Amino acid sequence: MESAISACHRSSSFRQRLATWWVILRVALEERLVYRGDFALGTLMRFLPIITQIFLWRAVFDAVQTSGRADVAGYRFEDVVAYYLLTMVARAFSSMPGLASGIAASIRNGEVKKFIIQPVDMLGFLLLSRIAHKLAYYSVAVGPFALVFFLCRGFFLDGWPSWPVLAVFCASLVLGFFLGYFIEACIGLIGFWFLEVSSLLFVYMLLNFFLSGHMFPLDMLPGAARQWVDWLPFKYLAYFPAAVFLNKLAFPQMLRGLAIEVAWLVAFVLLSRLAWNRGLRRYSAFGG
Amino acid sequence: MNNQAIHPPQNEPSRIGGRGPAYLRLLWLFACHSLIRDMSFRINFLIECVSSVSWALMNIGFYWIVFRHTRMIGQDTGWGEAEFFVFLATTWFINSLVQTFFMPNAEEFSELIRTGNLDFVLLKPVDTQFLVSFRRMDWSSLSNMLTAGGLMAISLWRLVTRPENPLKIEPIIVVLYVFYVLCGVAILYSVMIGLASTSIWLGRNQSLYDFWFYITNFSRYPMEIYYRGWGKVLWVAFTFVIPVLVVVNVPARLLARPLSPRAWWEWPLAGFAVVATLASLIVSRWVFQRALRSYRSASS
Image (cartoon, rainbow over the protein chains, first blue to last red):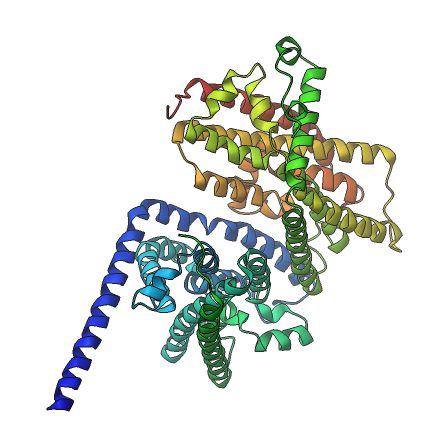
């Protein structure tokens, strides 16, 4: 009897929690869909810099091909363009605009108090809003993305990868989202100690831009640097999904990559928990 | 604080309204005022300098890696590593001048329109475009001039001392280089003020700034790379309609001299750059004034 009640209670509390999550998700989703026109246009515009990249690499490959080589670090010209397009997809998952600075701001202006009072976990709440944000974004951005990829289908010389590779690709995108979220959350939570994290965030952005492979395929790095970068978490935010899609990695390498990515993810989840708990202990709730 | 030093003296409207030295003095006051503002947040100023320099260094890193894999950008264009770094340094010279003097003002301009504070600018006995264009200066953006200067010095040194066909730099080329860098700044300024004026018609224009960024993005590479296939459309549009391709290409080409002897079209292009500069200044002035005529004050 006792256990039945508690089980019943537990299941209803779980259902309540699910309901809470659902409401958070829906509110955030509706909030995001208000500006869908601006969204779609902005997404399309974001592909514009790729045009100059295409011309730059075309010129580079022209010069390379006259010296008798057909590829640069294993990439043909078309592969480089396909790579840039794919990193756009990866970045659509892993980039978290405004997350770290938002957390730091809410610590600074005292807004974080509401999470201490309410029975809602801040990291969980923000994660759900972020998922909603992303879902809303994809539901609008899928149009421009599909259009650009259709127009650029000629750059994908090898067509679609096999199903297992595609599965790893999707897994790496989802993991990239969570990794991006928890890295930025950790940076934001440093705000408990420093209040202002914008310069730290800038350093992160810089490293991210260069070492994630957003700027160029990481295979082009000279040997020693390449090995270092392989162990860092940044490459999972852009390079890894693109490399998987383009069949740059053998299957064991892919799985090893996924394993390292999961390890980094776990590390950052734990770190963010630790930072949250330690941070709350020294938090003194300034402001209204 | 000494307000008198920052604002033009109120009792001499005739001098401010007149041409010549009054405008120069006003410019000087704006410069001082902005520097005082920047210096009251010194650490912030320093951080901004460091961050813009590190972006620049990262760009050098990118092209360094590219040139580990190729000797040249484009077949037989002559843009090898040292030549291209002269090009890159020129890009930064021009961009940091634009960002120092005009970027903060263009940003503020659309804000002035949105809030209706443009009224106060219109009331002042000074040319409105002058006032809107020069009010704020962001001195920290000049820090990139140093990076660019360093990169330029190293690259020129490499070009001058290379064993085969070393580069000779004549004084006239240096004079022309400075002249064309200023022309480039003028063209980019015209594009920027033109785009900013459209916010009078459109209200807010956040994506227009993205647009500005994407347009100027084309100016960052040697123009030859666009001259192929459907890129020729871009080449024509960005040379003759919105002349951003001549902004960096003309001065960088004059100085780095990627092709030796020079191609036949280099001097005609340089001549065209002067025409393009004058034309874009005139057109942007016209657009600005047309836009002002449709300004209807917001608020109050």
